Image 1: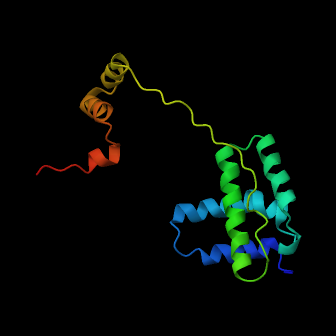
Image 2 (image 1 turned 90 degrees about the horizontal axis):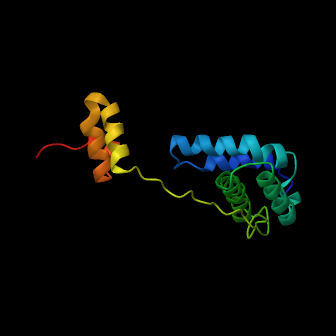
Length: 149
């Protein structure tokens, strides 16, 4: 069994993630520092148990962490432990098959024609932009990239 500490392994795992966008790397670093390392950092990889992960994630949810954030924390921990399995430091990944909270998507709200018109009026000289974006569904970056020809 592995005697490597989870905190040390977390940093090693992050070093292996060479193909990440800078924002994704920062998100992983944040997840590790805010949630994973404080709870698991001083333990060895071999001490991390499935039932403890399950209870920990349920506790994160109960303390108000959003379902999507709990799932992101789980992804980081699970990928880190997956590398430990592939490296021969663990026989199996204790983060596999952990029940995760459901992400409830809020119903989308669409502006009425009158609301779009009021917003466009309030935008002043940008009225055509508001109308274009509202009625085409094009995102702002896509609109900005449009060229004649």
